[in-house]
Image (tube, rainbow over all chains, first blue to last red; front, side, top):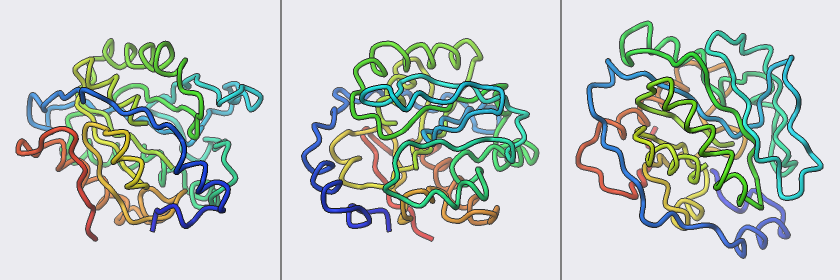
Length: 160
Length: 79
């Protein structure tokens, strides 16, 4: 069960007290056409990087707000998982990155026509960012722009 | 991730987020979230289990298709 009781007492207290930013108003884009005609992109906050990409900066105060592009034809076994939190078990997604970045699954969905297609690139960011100011004002809008340019219709976001 | 989802929705991309902590979703209000009963690090259930991963993804896709939902939509996943 994904609840706070998985975590240590100090982390539970931090999460309880953390000033989460409420999204208000909540933006809402209804699906404009059947999923079988929609192009899908993945967004993962597991901190996955490709072998040839720079790692996320662990020294970045409040968490590295940058994004990496994961190409659609990426070999999932080559992805390196680098989520900064040591508060949970990383072994599952290290054994199978699809657990948190299901690129093989969405390719299968496209192959059987459940979705219209898989975008040529996907977004990977770091989770557990405690100072999201720059993420909100700069890096997330820039990352979103890439998916807009690709005419992506739907996004599946997978945190860890 | 809710903040990223909101940015995408503002730009015209329909989103659904897997959600592991109900408390966080209730505070942040991501547009569409599927609350899953899995532990952290296991957002789609189990590694090397494509069938189980597909069931979670399919439940998320159905939120995209459900025209009766209103924002913020937080729906429980049931296995």
